[in-house]
Image 1 (tube, rainbow, N blue to C red):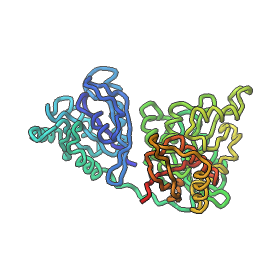
Image 2: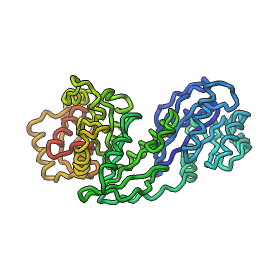
Image 3: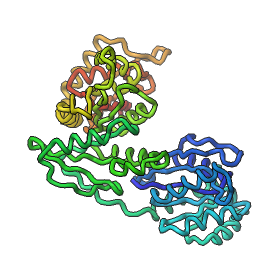
Image 4: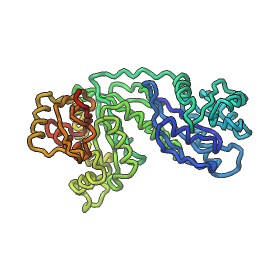
Length: 436
């Protein structure tokens, strides 16, 4: 997936534009210049295409300040890692020396740049857009992030200037596996084990992720593609700045995989970053295996798998469906079952339940369960159910009023569905539809 990065001097509305394009209030919007110091990313979907959007701190290239030096490095990294740059300026006040300095930095690169003249709230300010062409870029558009003016036109312009996506033809007989996790949890060691311990490696073929190589492995008549996550082969360059874009590339790898193996450090499990990655895997409908690495380093008294699993269910309840392995990538202990778990989750992700079995479950629920109500005497009714899709398994329930459904009942119904078949490691999606 392409990466688009927003750059520009402070207080031109970069965060407002980010929020408008992503549809979320992820970035802090404040009138104080330079309030966005760290980068924030989001995913934008437009006309059935998607790209990652990165928001950066306000840049003043010539200001002699350690913070500005850091921001300059971030912008330079953004240029190197991005497919398209949005140079945002204040359209009402026009460009100034700070905008020109940023533009000069960007002109030295070969990356496409769109100048976005923000704060053009109405027609009377449109004539100010011509000044933006003075920054030396061909693509210029006037918008108002605050009032949503010309935002759709900007999205179209972004898609027009992104590189064509490489064809990613999936072999139906291969299992795509992404090894993901926060830095220094042993991802590279896990990849080395999976690829180095198998003597049937036949090739290393380029993947669709830039600067990444997917390892293709044949094992017991099954083809595995280990989907690389950026940074695995560039360890000498792993700094704070690079780790940020490695995270974005990791999200891209998750999007390409069938099963993600989330590697966590047994001595420091369930961190916020672990939870965010797990949540993203579930949101994307991917299979999930949880691998607790560095198990050998724990004190003997702490090596209680049952206690760790119980903690996992409390800390990360939304992935309690996932299998858990305790392993040491250093010694290889516990990794023998990893391929077995990956294959099982892959199969479960394609599992179907017949309509007859589903509606038998519905009849049992109607006969024995107390169904929710709207509090005004109207009780919930389920007419029938069908499985509409796989990868992930998706179920549609036709009911009298979808608005009556509450979270506890949906959770209970998911538990009933999991009781009908083996869905270990697989998220289940449930949709409610009013009966026509």
